Length: 62
Image 1: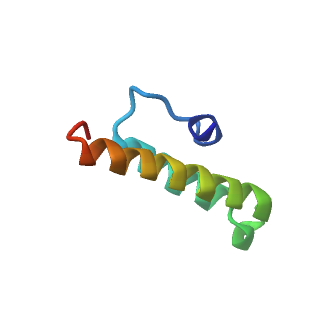
Image 2 (image 1 turned 180 degrees about the vertical axis):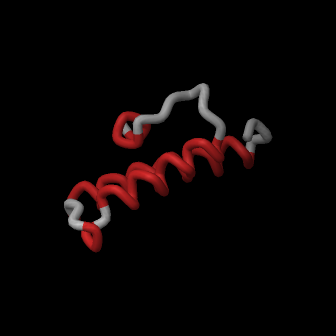
Image 3 (image 1 turned 135 degrees about the vertical axis):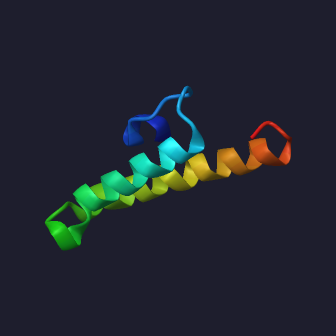
């Protein structure tokens, strides 16, 4: 599940989730010695949450 990969929960704001995503990318990016597969997993998890957020916003629940 996307939220588990990013270590976020439903009580967090969208800004907090984005900050967590950026933090994880900085830690796991291959340019700083991180694992490319983990980086890809983080990116895909964030994309999934981003799509969910967009759907909620479109319905007026963002």
